[in-house]
Every structure is written in C-alpha cells, then in structure tokens.
Length: 607
Image 1 (cartoon, rainbow, N blue to C red):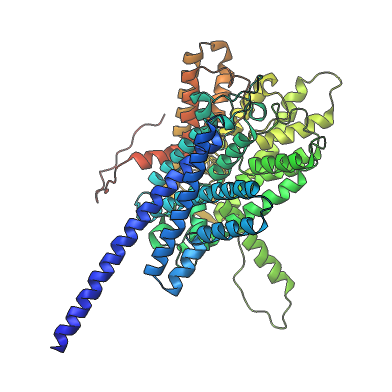
Image 2 (image 1 turned 180 degrees about the vertical axis):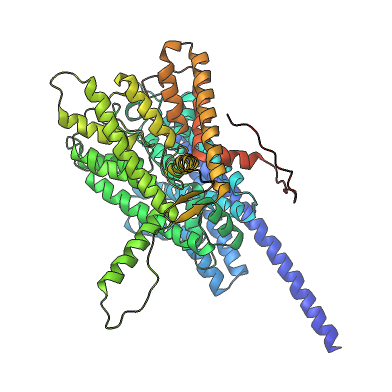
C-alpha cells in the first residue's frame, strides 16, 4: 500500500513538473513574440518620424505593453522554476536584469518627475531604450542557442554575418537614418545604397557609394558604428560575452566547442581566456585611442569631438575605414594623431586577439621571471611565443617596413619639385599601414602612380593576421607560401621555421587559399570591366576588386559611380573577403566521411 502511495505521489509530481515545463515554454514563446513586436514598434517609431501623431501614441503603447508583459512573464517563470542558482544565472544573463532595471527606472522617473508631461515622455523613452536592449539580448541568446546546436561552425559564421547585414540594411532604410534633404524633408535611402553600406560596415571594409558624414544622419552614423563594431569582433563573440559573464555555467560544452573552432584556440579553457582578452583589450584600446584622437578636430564642439574621436577609434581598431569627414584624413598625414595613435590602432586590430593574448602572457612571464632573484635557482620552463605569434609579428613588421619604404621611393620619383619630404615620409608610413585592410586615406588614391597602385594591390591582397578584424588571404598564409617556395629552392620537402615544422596539411591549405583568392580577385576585375565598359580603367578596377576582397575600403575614385550590377558584385566580394572563401566552401559542403584508403601514387611532370 505504501509503495502504491509513493508511486502515485511520484506520478503526480512528474505530471505537475511536465505542466510547469510546458507553461514555462509557452511563456518563453510569448516573450519572444512580444519582444519582436515591441522592437518593431520601436524601429517604426524611431525611423519614420513623419507618421501621424495618433499612430505614434499607439506605438508608444505597444512598447510599454511589451515591456510590461516581458516583466510579468519572467516573474512568473522565476517563481515556477525557483532555485538560487537559476535566479543568479538569470539575473546576470539579463533575463531578470532588464525588467528590474526597467521597473526601477520607471519608479525613479515617477519620483523625480517635475511635470506630468515630462514624466510621461521620460517613461516612454525609458521603455524604448529597455525594449531595444531586450531585443539585442534576444539576438545574442539566439546566437548562443545556434552555437550550442550546430555541428558546422562555418555555417554559423556565414549565417551570423548574413543576419547582421540584413538587419543593418533594414535599419539604414529608415528615413531617420538619412540626413534631411535641402528642403529639410526626410527621405529613405535607396535599397542598393543601404545594402552596400550595411555590407561594407558589417564586413569592416569601408567602401562607400555615398559620403558617410553628409549622407547619413547621426542615427545612421550610430547604426554604421554598431555594424562595424559587431562585424569586427563578430556577433558570436558578443553572444559568448553574455555567456561567460552569466556565470560558470553560462558557456555550454557545444557552444564552447564551436567558439574554439571559430577563435582557432587549442582548448576550451583557451577559448574562455581569449574571450576575456578580447573584451578587455578591445575596450581598453578603443578608449585610449578615442582619448588620443580628441584633438584631431579642435574646431568641433566638445560633444561632437568626443563622438568623432570614438567613431574613428573604433573604426580604426576594427579596420573598418569609415570616417565622418567626407574627404577622410586627406592631407592630414603629418598630424601626430594620424601617424601615431590611429596607425597603432590599425596595427593592433590587425594582429589578431590570439597573438595579443600570447604576447601579453609571454611578456608577463618574462618580466616576472627576470624580476625575481631567489637564493636558489631552479630550472623552469622558458617562456616562449607560439610559432603562430612569431610569424604574425615578424611578417607584420616586415610588410610595414617594406610597404612604407617602397611607397616612399615610388612616389618620390614622380614627386613635384619642392614637395615636402616630411609629408611624403608620413604618408608612406600611413599608406603602408592602411593598405593592410584599414581603408583610411591621407592621400588621393586616384592620383597615385600606377606602380604605387600595384604595391597597394599586393599589400591589400595579403591583408591582416588570422583571427583579427582585417581581411585578405592573411599574413600567415602568405608567409607559409613564401616559406614553401624557399623550401623548394633548398631541396627540402618540409616547411621549417624557428625550430618547428609546419604540417603539410596547413601548407596545402595556404596554397589553396592563395589560389582561390587570386581567382576571386581576377574574376571580379573581369566582371567589373564588363559591367562598367571602361577598359582604360582596368588598373582601377583591379584596385577596387582587391580592396573589396581584402576588406580594405580604399578606392581609386570609382566606387560612387559603379552601376547596380557592379555594386551587387562588390557586396558579394566583401562578404567573401570577410567570412573567407574557404569558410564559405566548408559551410556549403556536405559532411563527407573520407574513405579509409589511398590510391597508388604516380608522378606527373611539373615543367
């Protein structure tokens, strides 16, 4: 009898738990629905300023109701699934933090509101802000869920950039994102302009068909700013930030595995440590860079100078190349902010976060080992940089010196009489830096000598380091290819460097990436020549195609005049350059289990 009672009790508990779980899932679905509705109402309210006043009130009501239901639903789910750990996790991850902050903000506005009208306006603006935060967090949670379920990280990487580009295009289509015309009226940007700008910002390229500063409004500038910040670091990295900050259980095993593949780290622990390095390094460098650039435009008011400095600091670190000045940094190459802090931001963003983390750890271990002088010395493992970090640092240094020296020599041959040597030195340094996927300009690239343009094409094709905010075929790929050629000259069948041997599979992959990159650039150039029907500008078309593939963003003055087919082609090439052609091929390829056999070898003639 007692056994039957226990079984009935356990059965009732199981049924109650199932009902609770189903109700909790339904509440979660309702939260997603109201978040989407509230976020769309916010975008419509913020973007279409010229809607009727009656409809504006309706949009305000929708946002407030969405936040209200979001708070009520999450409160119910909290009571239904009560446990100390879940409360802490939900609070840290933002699920409870957003409703609590919203309610506290409403209470503070109610207590400090001087007039009923001002208080009502403040409550609406506060609700708009919080539903926007809830919408952004919902996107990050979705990315985390996909990262925890997908078996192919390449699919997730390609898909995340496609989502960012789509959202960016829709946002830039809002009338509020475009600057008013001469009559003060708001107009929407054409679809091809919005798509091209969103793709260029998300892929941190910097190519533009309309001047950023004058064509887009401050809201449009903020959207572009968000796109290249997310595009530089990756939306999956932002989602992982939320996971790591939400507690020890925030990063699931499958999610950490996907993140490890995308960050190219050696272990799960390395992925978590690299995430914190990315977060702290990015915030610190961008903040210091913004402070350094405050004096670049002293004629601007202080609030505008702060925004201008922040925009260019983040744009430089993300190697985006977007500028709020229509002529960029033309003729400003001798300013210390340009050849100093701005160049350093570009170089640091192009090194790759794994290299920064490895270098910082190596420097810390080296300094701590030298600072200690114990009575007895014991043998310790010597601190060393990884082979990857050494290749990146040396190749970056050599390419910067090589590019600056050769650009100075080429431009000096054809320089005008009496031109400033100091200006040419400063310009040569900045061009060597910016051609490595940054996209800024201190000279008119259209007026460069053809030999200088060929040098720029060479540097743009190589690009930045793997795992960085830059594009191109990557410095490591180029270095491994050169080392492979050198090994052939030496009669060696292995690529060796710094006492290490690079695996043959990676050498083969590097050669493949070089070949695919050359094919994309040459095919794009040929199509541009066909679409534009200006064969006399073949070198400029090659310059444009390489700039798009390397996500550089410099132009020889032809971007704004491109026809619609050429603009769409450049969008595709920028997307390929950001996600990587090999990554895209892996995403499209079906899972294929290699057969456990080898065919007989047979030699072929190589000439």
